[in-house]
Image (tube, rainbow, N blue to C red; front, side, top):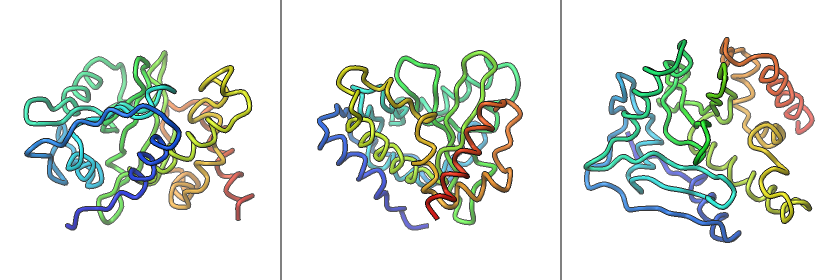
Length: 221
């Protein structure tokens, strides 16, 4: 399989630089994981493998909570370690369905792929997981690179918000306040409409949010 290009990731890095948001990106391992490498018995998404061929971990947009990509290098496989911990400590099967690869620093919010919904090329959708209280997941993107593109668009909207200087990221919480940005992903909306993200843990609020994504897509069309 050819190494996937990552225009969404490149765009996110460019947005962070243009907006002056902090990035910490150590170089890749000398032996980055291969596509399909097993994480607790689950194949690694090919796009994630491509990410790790470029960096061993990352903190992106740390000024506004941002994204912390878990470390995977010659000495540490934090992806396997964190997924093992979450699956062992969580009551129920919430994390059994996912491969967590990143999170929001200092919060119990995670970004994860959904191996059970991989497409013909092995690309897995991405969800946002809130592990407070009962826990639930929200669908974010049809693949890893679309997730990075979504977050870049979010950062642009956040920084441009008239109240950002006063209230910071609280003015546009991710992902609850941006269903209109999520709705730009046709394949993701199709999966939502087909009921493929019907996690029992999601709850009423998450179902309402998914409906907002679908309605936003219809307005775009």
